[in-house]
Amino acid sequence: MALALLATLVWSLVGASISFAGYPDQIASYPRDGDPRVPSDAELYIVFDEPTVKTGSFSVADLDSGGQGVLLLLNTPRWSALGDTVFLKPSVPMTPMHHHGMRVNTIFTESSVMLMFGAFAGSAIGNVAE
Image (tube, rainbow, N blue to C red; front, side, top):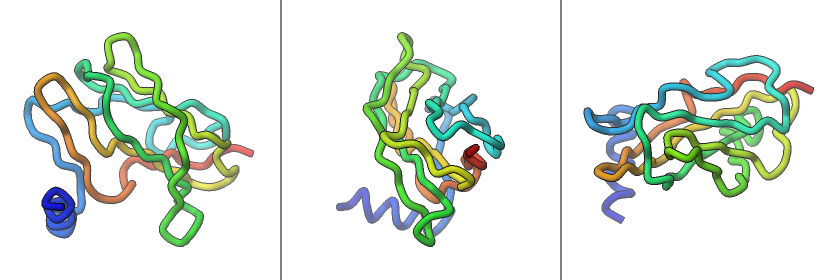
């Protein structure tokens, strides 16, 4: 409960992700922000600047549906051997010609956890191809 209140407070104050020195940073992804014509059945991935313990939570949303977007159900994430890359696959194809977004909600390393708050801004996948 306290964490949820803290998250609400932080979001209301900054409306963005929180990252501190020593915490993992996202250094690459597929698709990149705004990529056009992403295949509707694409496997998405996020690369971090250090290995993780292969534990985290992630969201993918159809930003053009439901007014404020609709979260997509994801298959169980797959991880690279080092744990520095997570592969995400929506359980059903993404909607063609819609903008979609993805983000890291939490990611764990041996010594830290990074919490993300806020909207999908800055992580939009772009238009999904027909």
